[in-house]
Image 1 (cartoon, rainbow, N blue to C red):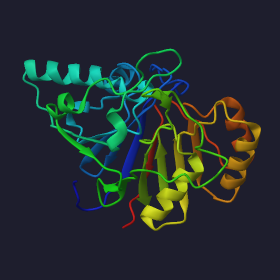
Image 2 (tube, rainbow, N blue to C red):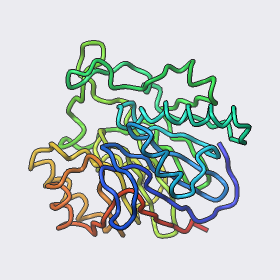
Image 3 (cartoon, rainbow, N blue to C red):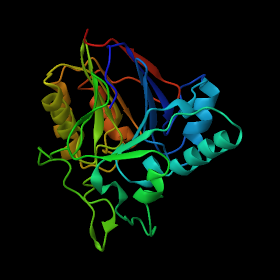
Image 4 (cartoon, one colour):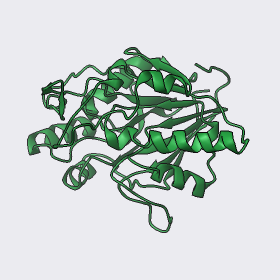
Length: 286
């Protein structure tokens, strides 16, 4: 992956369940985050439809110049925006517009077939061979450093008994535990920025993995889905206790976190608003 001088990292929410007030964008139950770290651009998850693409255009963000498309896991609210993205890239070819051939980065289990909620397929909409015609496909269970400061965490060990134990859908007739769930982490001068999709492995386990991979205990920010929408009170309480000990600079719960969990977390951490249009900036380590 690209390495080079360290620069500030800019993060923009392109898709979420809600939008920031007085920013006139579209929302849907999904998530997509655009990251620019120096000269490297990363698109983390793609939502369910073309909402992320339309919002990016409205914000003046050129997704044809995306170096890395990273997926948190296979589910439709994170990957089905891939088809609008590929259609956008096809139109660009026809119109003679310049574009970067991206790297598609994910866990090796990203292409498994998943069913859920009576829907026969809720997984990745294309197979590996089809995607490989669009750009390099890089699958890894291990961490992958995208830049000197930004890392794809790979497979996340499930460290806490109160989270990450349930199934979400079925794979080949068996309960699917979402083995491909992963996240990103950025090493800022103020600590880690942990960027999650759904945190099926558990938001606390995800943060612990980021600390381990990056060799950093300070947490500057946690942003993304925390997968607490249907969590039991015991899990929410345990998660709040973990966050209370983090001393995180800011916590931005969104997507699948849920109202009750967000309210509870606000009593344990510095919870801030999240939605489409949110822009954050973080200084690199040096």
